[in-house]
Length: 74
Image 1 (cartoon, rainbow, N blue to C red):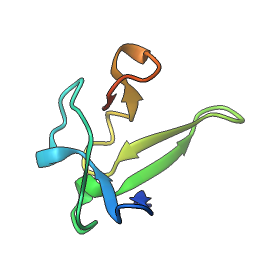
Image 2 (image 1 turned 120 degrees about the horizontal axis):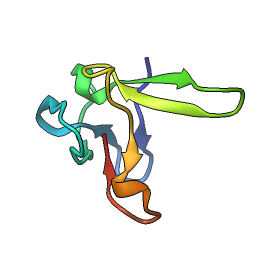
Image 3 (image 1 turned 90 degrees about the horizontal axis):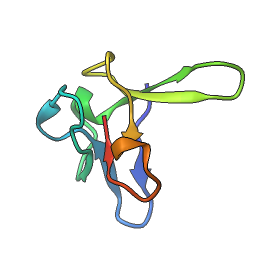
């Protein structure tokens, strides 16, 4: 289990309100206390890794519609 912290802002990657629906935006927050701010790194193949929020392991971090420069979502 990991937390992902922006070193410039000291904020942590989270899934707001512990949402577990498709296409839920991710954001940052001031602390890393709850499970929707903790991440599991899952190996999927030899060089591919997936980030899953520990509150909702059926979803994974992605970009909206797989587009470059899109919002990060689960």
